[in-house]
Image 1 (cartoon, rainbow over the protein chains, first blue to last red):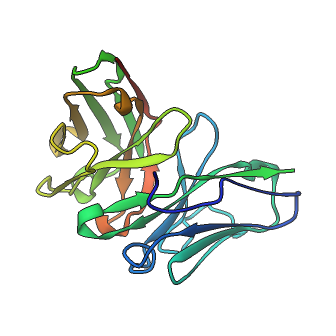
Image 2: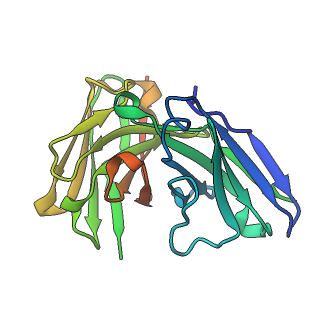
Image 3: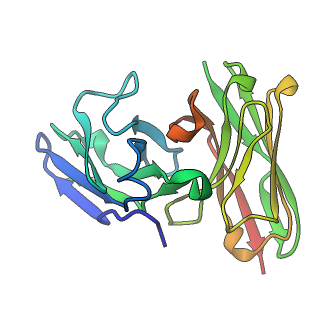
Length: 111
Length: 121
């Protein structure tokens, strides 16, 4: 069982927006601004899409944005494109005992 | 160009051992913490183990503590994961992942393609 909670699925039509939530606790997401998001296409390695809540790595389109409120972080994909269809995982630093925790993943479908 | 290439996966019986390797190139390995993250078939990501740039600090998930040992050889640009007393629930694709400068920020900016470990019972 994952330490973080994500909805199993989310969907939207091309051009629309979709937001994925990631809920943790006051020991992980609520305690640190160290939330990352990873995109994974079938059979491929995960790819970093967002880090430190809202920072985008070089090369990631600005259609992707991140935010956090309390114990919940969110990833929003605006202007959905077919290539955005993938699994998305959130992760957070959770202190020196637990270190890093991941969410169970959210499958984003572009209708 | 940063590249991470895992090897050493395969089929092993329950109770057996395997040693995974990750060959790193395109960056100075000693500058960065390195990590192993696994993914069971059809499941999500699980953080397994990590090691600081110098090798002086390590971390293990509770699920593998006492059975797995992470190490690195910066002179050979290599990361390792020695897996002993393997169990069926260790079956997964194991990814090698590079951290950014600050390990505890939990930013894994490069990943290998993964190596499959299958433990038969």
